[in-house]
Length: 319
Image (cartoon, rainbow, N blue to C red):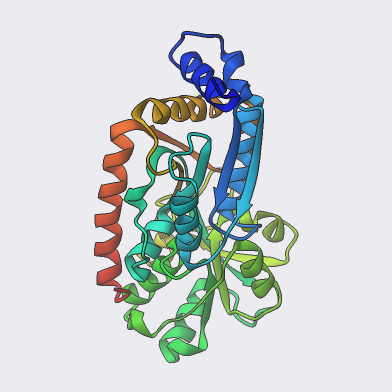
C-alpha cells in the first residue's frame, strides 16, 4: 500500500473512532484562498489552518491565494486542480455566491463538496480620516446629487458590500444601477485605496478595518447589522433611517469528486478545529459570530442563499 493511501486510511479510521486522533494529525492539508492576501477570506483560511493544527487534526496546512472575480478564479483552479483530493479545502462564502450570480463563471460551486459554514460577520462602511464628508447622511446627500461622484470601494463585484451599497441607493431613492462601485481583488487593495483617498467610501467586514478605525485613520459610518455590534460604538444603517441589514457568512468546501466517507473525515476535522483554543482566539480577535453548520443543513443553506441573494440583487438592479 502506498504511504499516502495508508495515511488517508488511518485518517478515515480515526474520524470514525477506529483509531486515536493521532492518525488525523498526519494529514497535510492544502487550503485554497480565492482572494488576495489581507481580506476576510484570507484571514478566515489562515485562522482555520492554525486551528486545524492546534486541534491536532492536521500535521501541516499550506495556503494558495488566487484572487479575482469574487472568488471564481480560485474556484476554477480548485475544481479543476484538486479533483478527488481528500486533503484539499477552499474558503468561500456569501461573496462567492454573489459573484457567481453576476459573473456566471464557467465552473459551478456545485462541482465542489460542501463541508461547513464557519462564521458570520457584518460589514462596516468607512471614510478616510481626511474626507470632507463626515457621516453616512453626507454620503447619501452627495449620492443623491450625483450618484457617480461617490466611489464605493470594496470586494469583487457581487460582494456583500457591493450588494449593501446598491440596497442603500435603492432605499434612499437613487437608481442602484448608477452607483459608482470600484471592485478590488482583496482586502489589502481595498484598504490601501481607502487610506489613499482613491475611493469616497469603503466597505468590508469590521475585522478588516478595525485597526484603522481604532487608530483614527478611518472613520466608521455604519454597520449592516440589525443592532449595534457588541463592544463597537458604530451606529447601524437602520438607526440612521436606512432600512438595510445584510450579513456576510464564510465557510469551507472540499474538492470535487471526494467520497462521502472522505467528506465526513474533513467535516469532522473542521468541526474539531472550531473547538480549539486557536479558533476561539481568532473569533474574539476578529469579532466574528459563530455560525457552524454542516451536512445536509449546510447544503440546503447554500441553495437557499443563492435564491435569496439573487432576489436581492435583481431588486437592486445588479442582475
